[in-house]
Image (cartoon, rainbow, N blue to C red; front, side):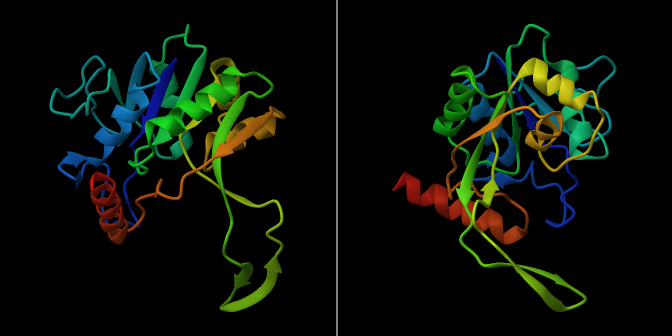
Length: 220
């Protein structure tokens, strides 16, 4: 079993690449690599496009964050995952994909998605949270409609998949905001496990402060 930690984004909304910023004394991406290693035989870290260590001709200065292989990502999230897939050994039966921007995904969540796939009955497993807010469609500065929340969930990473199915989904070269969406297009079954509200995504600078506070509270 292998894991791919996607840290290839430019951090446009954050104001720069946040995956290498310090979080409680460690780089953001290192938190994700460590958690992924708890369930994996190997970890591939995908960094922003350009030279990356771990491949022939790559720059030795690129930080590995403890990953076994570091590869350069593409222009989109899906392209970055495909770059990571290319570095995963063919014999891997299950592959976990995790966004480095979620550094507080704990070991239990990694275990939960992997065990859900191993249990059979689904080709993938994703952590979800119920949607608490009222949702509306809006355009042009006006509310157009209210969305029925029944059955809606917010999806997190890590996400685990049967390796052959994940590879097949990415061979379509499709684009999606998460890998489960590509499996859905194939008609593959994706099951859910309970997400964690502490598994925050670092999207804006203030999110880093929230993550610091959560780590501090857990340490007390």
